[in-house]
Every structure is written in C-alpha cells, then in structure tokens.
Length: 227
Image 1 (cartoon, one colour):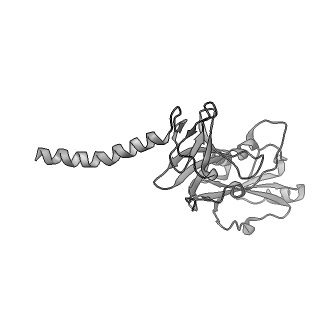
Image 2 (cartoon, rainbow, N blue to C red):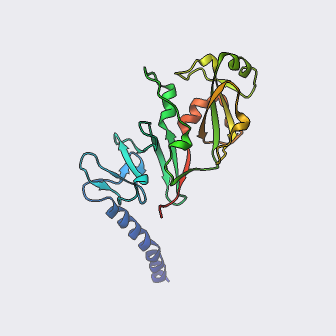
Image 3 (cartoon, rainbow, N blue to C red):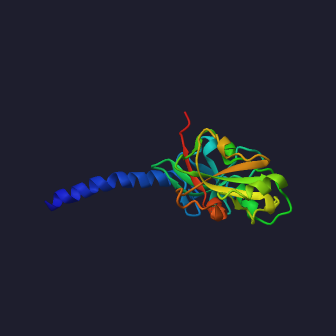
C-alpha cells in the first residue's frame, strides 16, 4: 500500500519536474527569465541588454519584452515614440496579463512637455486584446463653455490633479462598460475631447473620484498565439 502511494506521488511530481526543467532551459545560459517579480515564459521573451543574450525562447516581436531597470517587464507600444505598458503579472494558464499604460501616468507627473495622448486600444499589437471584464474610464478636456455644462453632470468628477489641461474644464467618468468595438458615442460631450482608458474593478467600486488609483492599478489584457 505504501509502495503504491509513493508511485502515485512520483507520477504526479514527474510532469512538474519536467515543466520546471523546461522553464529553466528556456532561460538560456547567462540570464534569468525573470524581471522583478514576473517570470517570463513562452510566448514572451526578452533580450538581456547587458549580456546580449535572449532570455526565454525568441519568437514573435509582438511578445518581446524589455526588463526595465530590473524592476518590471515593459511591453512596447505599437505607436512610435509613445510609452508602453508596465507588466505587473502574467497568468499563463489564462493567457492574461495585468498591465499599466505608462503614458497615462504621465498625466500625473510634473514635466515641461505635454505629448499627445492615445486611446489605450490603439497602442496594442494585433495579438493582444483588452479583456471585456474591464471597465472604461473616460477623461474629458473641455472648452470653457462645455466645461460649464459638464460641471452640472453628477456622474462627472473634476480632474484636479491632471496636468497639460485646464483642470477647471477637465473631468472624469468611471464605471463605463468596456466596448470591444470602441463605440462610446453615447458618452461623448459636445465641446470636449475624450480619452478612453481601460481599468479594473466592478461598477460598484469604480468611483470616478479614484480616477488616479484606477489608472495606476492597470487593467487585464489577453493574448492570442501567433499563427
């Protein structure tokens, strides 16, 4: 009976040992397929800038990451000269990542430059999709006249900490259901430029007053393997 138990335990452990060995072999000699607290496995990979060695199994460029100062993996933006995405964690079983759009964090940082802002969905490579479980946060940059009208809407919160805008006429709406087609016409405000940012959370917890925290917490992204 004891012998049978040991055999069963070994049968369960053996595939696990093979998986660990395979992961270690993927890393390549002289580099670690880990950046910060995130383990990098297929289909993701990156090149160690110091040694020039590929960490992981080099594959599609869409899945190439950069280890930023050894603190977190960076997924590049498909828009040139635009900040990419900080990868906070990866679920390989669910093919899901939690990432933060770094260009949106620039809205809260002191700087002398104000670069154009893009909707997050535009910056993603074709292999990636914003998970529909996310919500959307919409920020508005309004004219004086439109700003006066927007202040009367109870669902909008004034964005007092955003830079590169007149904060008197900048507003945020949270808890908007994510639309994969990008159709947010029902939330457009005349005289206001809108920027859509996916965020985590349920409708009950997505408080517009917490817009900075919602953006910093990031959102979920899924991927499809290249053909």
